[in-house]
Image 1: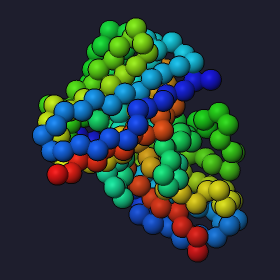
Image 2 (image 1 turned 90 degrees about the vertical axis):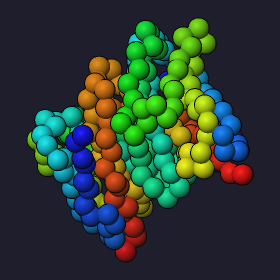
Image 3 (image 1 turned 135 degrees about the vertical axis):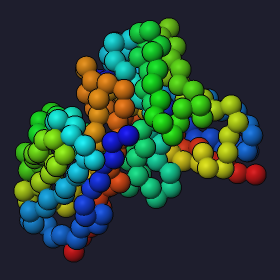
Image 4 (image 1 turned 90 degrees about the horizontal axis):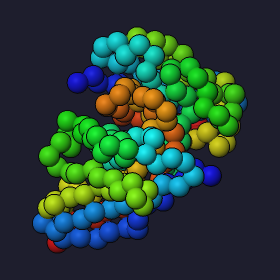
Length: 119
Length: 107
């Protein structure tokens, strides 16, 4: 079964760093792009960026370039979303998702990771 | 950047109704358009890709149409399980803008 399992909920203070994870199983991790999607409380979906674990090529959405870092470790089939200095406005649900073959849409999604940033 | 606009934002309907949601792109995106369903507290689920192709396992009451700048998602006979929020998404190799969502509520 193709599956993406995300790390658990996080509660952090402004200015702290954070890395959340997304572990893939059931398919060739290095052959599919993985992306991250933000959903702020009560709001819609926002495309943050994608990474190709095979060669770590990465692309970011305009609103997220320079704000987050997307990484992948192909040795352990895991993608990451990383912040160096969190802000209260980073509080949201974050989903990882696999892009279907080629340039397709996200066809498999993780369960989501809630990030709360509060002093 | 290409903007995606859905209408309506909220839709009230009854079980058995035919429901149509529209998504407009600010410029042509050919048929690189997907539709997702999201239920409260859950991850989105892919319903339609390439504007009109039904994802495996998705009931045939869901259908998509359109190309260029105007697209529609139709639910032919609304079922209790279909009350949710629906998002369109324009996608290509390196980006994937979502519409703002349409919430389908019980009338």
